[in-house]
Image (cartoon, rainbow, N blue to C red; front, side, top):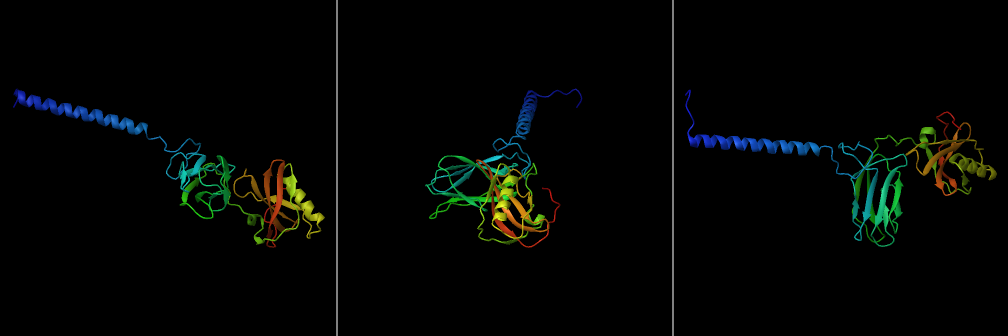
Amino acid sequence: MAGQRLSPVTQSTAMRVVAIFAILAIVGLGVWLWSNSRADASPFVSGESSDSPDGRTAPTVVDVLCDANFTLQVSSDTVAATASGVAVRVTSEAPAGAYLNYGFGGELMPASPETWMLAAPVGEFQMSCSTLEQEGAVVSVGVVDPGHHWSDRTPASLGCPIGGVPSWAVSGGTGATPEDAVAQLIANFTDAGVSPALTRFEHAQSGYPETSNQTWVIGTADATFMTAVVTEVDTGYSAEPDFLCAASPWTAAATT
């Protein structure tokens, strides 16, 4: 009714209602500011990439600890690949002789922490630590590749489908560069009188471009013959014969 004044009790109730709404507004504003300040926070350790499946920042090194009970602990469930591969910083508290198994290989765990570069492809890879007598549970880590380092190329991309794994009697080659090491390996085959005469070699460009283990394809001018594994060593590079190719023509133009 126009001009009617509220009673003291009604005024007091109205003031309490206004105060409650004011407090709720302040609390809501605080929650909104806090949640927005956390929106970009990452649960991972520092890293350079931001292309993990859930949009979080993935580290470029994952810490891996194998404890005395063969329980494997990892610092992140996602890691970003680099041009040299996937970096794994390994620490072992397990008994001497324990191995870190990583699906496509395995190595004896070091007595002191070391960083290993693994050729794990994009996707999930699994790790566990074990001895001959005991093995711990498997842990999965996802590899993302925002830098597009990984290549799915294989020797078959150059015309070398794998045809056999012989016991090679020819020694490997060494050199200051991968090309020099492969050239020396070819010279060793020539000196051994192996036929056909090998004259061409190509880097398969498979996996990661700066990995310490590279695959090369060797053959004649017209056909592929075998693959070689080129490894970085203290004095340069070494090249060891690996697989025979199934008789096939090259499928790429020569680059050497």
